[in-house]
Length: 218
Ligand code: AP5
Image (cartoon, rainbow, N blue to C red):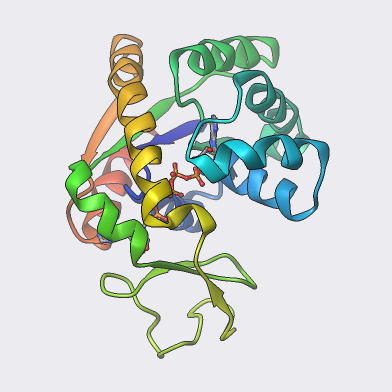
């Protein structure tokens, strides 16, 4: 199965991706995570991406398309299938993905759009914190660890907040993504692969909608 998860910043892509991977064992490919890793390692891609990410802008398409193309060509993706998270984000990237898929003899089976009113997203992003050791994502109100200050998944006590979750950057990230979102939804609706889920519900209820859909198409 080859999937794509779309949704505005804070809609819950990363949160649902963890659950989908646990159950369906597809390879999770988050362009945001790839850029953060490249920035931490100060690679050429990371240095290029940093100035855009710090401003809440999209990294240029040629850089983003290239890292996705390289990742989709790897053998683990061939065997298990992929789940893109945060890519494509505009029509040019959607067209690039079609070309990448064609060149690798793959096809996108479904696009899951996690639909949330933008008004809810500022609070989701400002309350988010992440385990530094394993990357698990939490929210101080909506999704705290079961034991205070202890990661459910790896037991670490070391958490951080993302730089781009500062209020000033969040506003621009939302504005940039809202603009791109509708054309992308239209594109995948026309392609007949779009499934929209109500992302304003509780995390487990959102997953139940996704799970019901995936078990039908799998
Ligand atoms: P990226 O890392 O992809 O960030 P994003 O799209 O802004 O999305 P987020 O990771 O912030 O949100 P999410 O939807 O995963 O939400 P989460 O599950 O964490 O990209 C970062 C940057 O990289 C971009 O701004 C851009 O610069 C660059 N980039 C990435 N891809 C690119 C591309 N294709 N082209 C160009 N540039 C690109 O949830 C958020 C919070 O809410 C958490 O605290 C969570 O616990 C909580 N939560 C989740 N679900 C619920 C729920 N149902 N109810 C209550 N709380 C919930």
